[in-house]
Image (cartoon, helix red, strand yellow):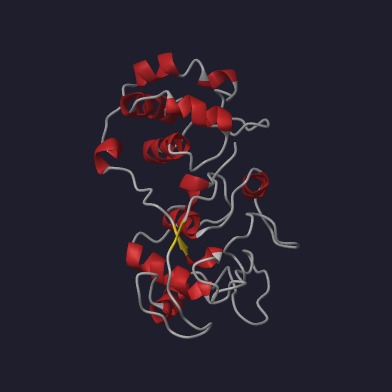
Length: 234
């Protein structure tokens, strides 16, 4: 399954690398504090090396799963091969809920739900990007469009029987027993993760052309029905 493409909107701001920044791009000082949640697995800054997770120097604009000698899941490596680039928007979505974007990532972190903390963390990491002062041209300073789903969409209660009817197209590729034989399994997903992923295809945040086409034909209610069906499929 292919994942996300770069969708970003450049914003002008000036700052020197290493200096504290407090703006709409985030507060670097607080971001350094927030990074403590990450440092058991990741390193950043001078001399940073891969740990349990990859080092994060130059993360902005980098393809997922692309660092030599870093330990990645097959899903993360495939995501990079399929076009996932770490932009401001994509990183924000991943940090909020890692498994919603890369379902079988080795990253067991539950995510950072506070939007301000995520912005501050990314402002801190931006210091260690390749060209942090090239504004607005540099990818590290790009701000993405809002990708959050309307809570009303997530609250839709899907009809699993209707989902079974709709799912006949899905199971031409995805295995109903949940195995990952070249194509990721989709059984047993939490409904919210399923809905978020399908809407990411519908919004063309995930680039797989077939999945974009399939999701684009589905209504909010139909996506909810599929989520309800596959969640309990054994």
